[in-house]
Image (tube, rainbow, N blue to C red; front, side):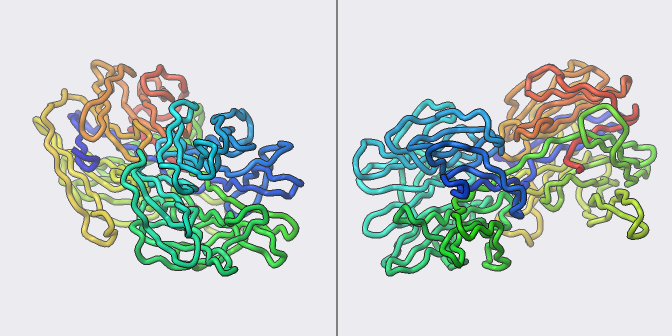
Length: 546
């Protein structure tokens, strides 16, 4: 049973329905890079527009090769010839590897393993090695007979792309355990190196250098090696044979950062679209080198809200603290309307939806003002209307396939329960949505309620059911119950969200009699965020409203 075969085992009493919570949105965070502007190579960070350039390290020797962790909390980098880790603000520096020459760290998508370029036997060749993020289980993946450099993980964690250098340098691909090596490029008069996958895994961007004095070129191709084309010229480096062009995709896949030469033959950081358009510089030093960019995937913490069925008013909070609603929006309100929340366009902000007797009405939160100088307030601007499901279904939304934006679905109560997901077919965004149907073999108990969240840090929504009489959540992964967690109160209404922005969801309960939210930041943990908010009739929701 795969991720699209997800079911919700629950029964609905009265008008209480709890919408599914979306998987983590893809948000472009800061760009880490290397600069020698202070007389020595150090690690810096900046905003994607080049503003707020801030030095993180201050070391007598060079610091290089920064790589953001998948949760955006840490940076792996090279100091001397070893891999180090530090927090995203430069604090907490710790040494991870103690090899002879370790360079170019690359995190696995789950954040548990780091691949890197190593000099395993102290000889003349480099290999691709891996080590766990706690420093244990160091392994060698390649054979040491040729140079293997610059590893990059595929988004699904199953493959590693790298540069293999002999007479020329080729982009190679292997399984994550080092088996099944195949070549994606075969340049006859140059080097291909520094590969990096697009977030959807469909493209690879890399640096290509012509041997006869040519500048390195940022090149993009399909992940199978086909249809390679030049995007832009890259950068040279005065201290190494191969340039640190280091092209990397933004987390949303819409931009590529790379290093490029200035007129004074120094390198700076530039951005370009994957189709080669809209190229701009975001650092502008003419006397120093800025290179080796790494783009942070920022994960926003989720906050709570409630929907009032009697009026169609949404009360949304921008922090998980006591207080009045930060955003008040009227959307819905007809008898029988049920709320559903999701990121419909993949912009990282959660939007609103209403399910009305077999029809989804989706809207985007948008600022509005009557005049230029008037104060803005928030409205729900209609996006579309989609006929899906039938009267009596329970609406849900989630990023079931991990593509960065949410799709809709319904759960149809019954003896066993059937869940219908509206999932676009892979590689065909314009095709008619596919429909996956699963029948549950385990019946729920009257009063069970569904929630959804990312329980395992894989970027996809899974589901859970909450049984109020027993105060118990039943978490599933790909349709199978994997964890049972006692939590909450009998009269509570469940929700789930990433309350700390760590990439994994915690559980929560809205207690209507106390008008309070009780949230747990760790699965299986006790409520550690408790605050007053809401209205007793409210149906809880969670999302990135701000």
